Image (tube, rainbow, N blue to C red):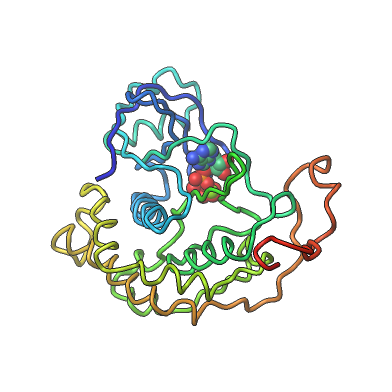
Length: 283
Ligand SMILES: Nc1ncnc2c1ncn2[C@@H]1O[C@H](COP(=O)(O)OP(=O)(O)OP(=O)(O)O)[C@@H](O)[C@H]1O
Ligand SMILES: [Mg+2]
């Protein structure tokens, strides 16, 4: 199970997030990015965060630790912002927390180099979970202590929004043209060889078991939360074995605008980066 903590102080909203996540302190003295059950995106976003975030961690990708967070909306009483007040009021009970990475920077493809092996692992993983939210517009990756960290797995597993069509939806290809790591020559074949055999029924079942029951109850068409957990497993398991064959880069990779200020990137060569003379994972 995920560790459960209790929120003790609402620090500040993270306005760049569409779901208005907040920085929250907890009774374990940790600081977390809290995603709220009362947010407009709904609880399925949180289910996706747990299943995909924990799956990524189990595959050895860097995803900050996830916890469940008990929230008593009373901690937001002093919060002047009406929107935040209402979000907290609608989110009493269990919410999701992600370990806050202090001092991390949003990933910028012009300011940070990624080798084909790491790019391959991340693009393959995003293909598996059908992540449509790791584009250059919204990379959902952080650079922390020189390493890449993956965040925000809420917009994944589109099939969870229409269970009767889930198997057909999960059998569809994944177009990675828009992926922020598409220009880094992701080595998909190696990633699939390394990671696909790790995605077993047992692992997926363990990961699905970490989703709190209360985010799964009363799903139409399922008579128990475990039946719904099995549906998540059944969609991902066959996809893991074959998604590399259906992973396409349909539109040519375009030049990526930098999101970093000029003073940070102007010393860099224009896109694409020149091939390295030596080292650097075969680029
Ligand atoms: N663990 C973390 N540590 C530090 N900063 C974080 C962390 N998680 C999120 N952030 C910051 O908060 C922002 C919003 O987080 P996130 O993308 O998870 O929220 P969202 O509401 O799902 O956003 P989106 O608009 O992409 O749907 C991130 O872009 C990042 O700047
Ligand atoms: Mg985001």
